[in-house]
Length: 151
Image 1 (cartoon, rainbow, N blue to C red):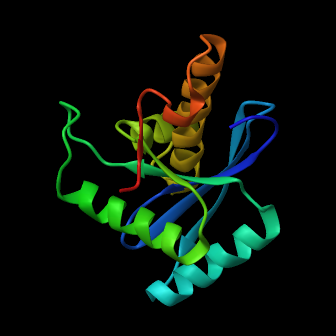
Image 2 (image 1 turned 120 degrees about the vertical axis):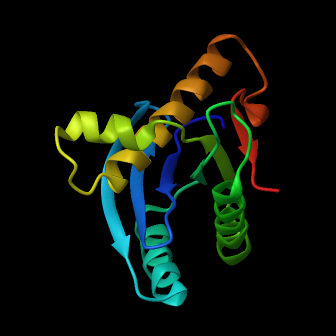
């Protein structure tokens, strides 16, 4: 990803969806909001509004892995969500290991309050860190180590 790009990240959950916003130039990510929706259509309507507003170059989705880095049942749900994002919006979707992001979000918040948007920002920070390391070592950024495509 050459040049400046805005990115939206998602901490996927069946009832809540955390959203983070970031930028490749600043390398920073911030919590944006938590989408609470009764239906999948409502969820995707809100995502469409965010995409229209922020015009991201790519979407980042946290991929749930077990402690050994293997995929689990929740991984399939996350992959399905990532594929739906790509199918509906035609944007590149990158899956990033989300292990520990909710615990880190709770630590940052200092509470057990809703941490989904903060977790999404942490997932995005991880991707931006991987991206900056890949650029620093002149790696091909189309295949950032530690990230996966949504196939």
